[in-house]
Length: 77
Image (tube, rainbow, N blue to C red):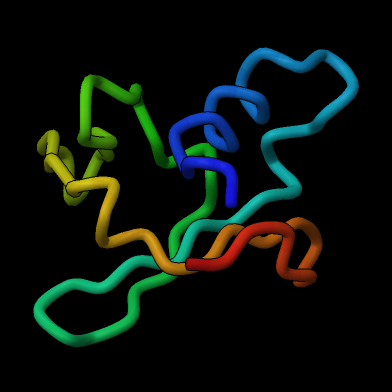
């Protein structure tokens, strides 16, 4: 299985891919949360930093469960 960090970086840097077509699902205190890929401000080390209500929030990469493109799963833990 490819590390999720590789998948996130490919979406960002591969000119053939359109980041606005992707969504990320992660666990937040046992609840599954879905965000558009474009909500990710950056990936640093083992965290993705998102804008949540105007503040930066660090989400550990190990919480990511699914990456979808146009509703289809392209990566799953």
